Amino acid sequence: MERSEILVTIKDHLEARGIDGELVTEQADLANDLGLDSLDTVELTVGLEEKFGIEIPDTELEGVVTVGDAIDLIQTKSPVGA
Amino acid sequence: MSDRVALVTGGSRGIGRAAALVLARSGLRVAVNYKERADDAKETLRLIEDAGGEGICVAGDVTNEASVAAMFGEIHDSLGPIGVLVNNAGVRRDGLSLNMPDDAWHEVLATSLTGAFMCSRLALKDMLAARWGRIINVGSAAGLRGSAGQANYAAAKAGLTGLTKSMAREVASRGITVNVVAPGLVDTEMTLSLNERQRDALLQNIPAGRAARPEEIAELVGYLSSEAASYVNGAVLVIDGGMAA
Image (cartoon, rainbow over all chains, first blue to last red; front, side, top):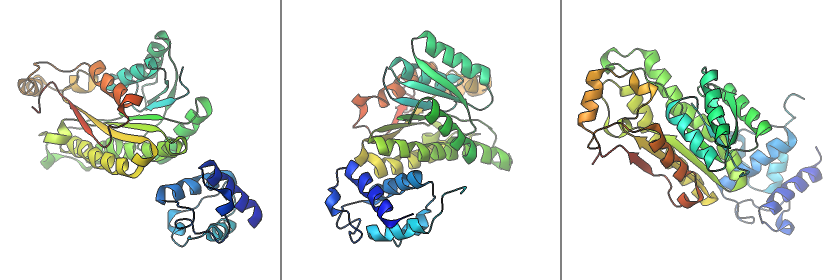
């Protein structure tokens, strides 16, 4: 998956939740810049899992601080069953 | 007809059937879960349809993660995302703690407590996305005061309280409520198996002097599922004819 494609998906998801899409860059800090709390993060994760057909274990979310980190993590995953 | 969908586990009989009916009457489309009693679940659905409601029957063993996932998939396909979850499935395997076999302990915990957890975990995904949800866990007076001969059942029902309060704290900010209804003695097939001595002993402690009808418990479930109950969260609502008074 292309980084840009994943970024657009993240941006769409967050915009649907009322977050200004302009703020959603690879450098943006999920908690401090975008104001996501732990539930928002879970929700984003679930949304991305469904969109890309992947599974992201909670334990792997620990190192995810920025949008770019999330993209890195998603790029390591292949669609389930693919 | 509301767009909202309810899932009632253990909806084939007793409190589950009555709750499914109340929810259907309030305009929800209802998935009636059963494990083995397909005919009883169909009867619940027939009652729903007779009342002008809509729903489906859906098989599923709440103690089995794969079965729960399949059940949710089926409900999503037929009805849509779940807005109201009534964790009602439960079994009794009574006996004194001293003699209680392991499987009697595990089965009761798996159904009432682990089942409620697994169904809630999946339903919360739908509710989080919708920014609205109601989870109603059917507890028991036994979970509050204990019950000789029912250590497994009482432990499972008490466990629901901790599950409920924790989940309520986690998701309250998203328009989701999680509550327990804790009935005392209710006239259902499950309590018909009590022997006369057990029944008399229970009735002596009930100021109302009678058991509840399942419909009376279902009305409280209906209230908790409603818009009106949006500020009731993490609560244990006792409905026991005054037994705990």
